[in-house]
Image (cartoon, rainbow, N blue to C red; front, side, top):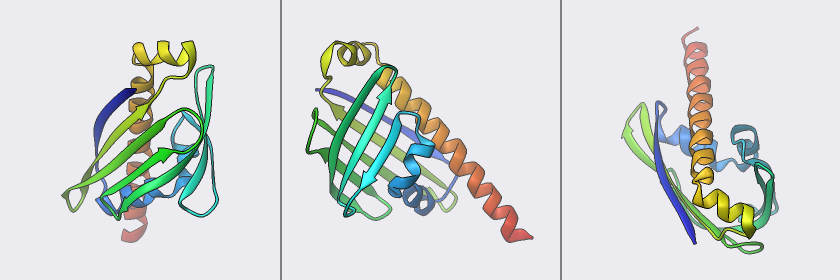
Length: 147
């Protein structure tokens, strides 16, 4: 199984970071590797992810939720895939998000992408985009409140 782990500091409160990430409908707009997420009951979701020419679809079940602290999931269909997103309070205006992913590369392209750490690079890129988006949105919210 391939694994990756990274963190990113966000200039937004932990509550905001958690709420934005936990709203699955936001993620395809925020993450380049996520093409689509369909949910049925809030516990199971169908994901379509794409990295380069490789498209992977799987159903995932949320295995743990600790509000404003942790969201964990595991695939229940398709190649094995699991992950945990953690949210850490730094201070009232900043938070840290941790990402841990585990996946079984499926086929030659995914095995090569894993060996070359292309998946890690894509995840880190998307986390940077998530940071930019949520911080920009948070800045706009503050400006509106001051008016």
